[in-house]
Each structure stands twice: as structure tokens, then as C-alpha cells.
Image (cartoon, rainbow, N blue to C red):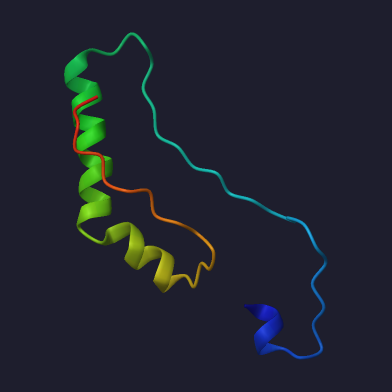
Length: 72
């Protein structure tokens, strides 16, 4: 996106910085905690929060994971 905005900018191939994010729980947490985390993540995707954040910060190329309706 920066290369499109600035004609004198040259970007090198490959990734300079990648931000991989995940949420998880220790195996010792009970099923209720797993269900809570699953619902939280799915609610953030379903509400549009994640998609809006990607758009707001002009993140290109990111793909929003599909909703998962089955319980963990």
C-alpha cells in the first residue's frame, strides 16, 4: 500500500515483519474457560470488530477466518 502512495518508494520482496496472533489457554483450564474463549473470539469476528480493525488500520492481504459454530 505504501508503494502505491509513494512513487519513489521501492519495497523489497519477502516479509520484513509479520504479526501472527493467537489466543489460547493452559491445558489445565476447564471446559468452561475454553467455551468462553471460543465464544469471545467468534463474537469479535461475527460483530465485525476484527474486520473493522483490519480496515481501520489499512491492513491489506489479511483474511478473516470463517466463523466456527461448533463448541470447542
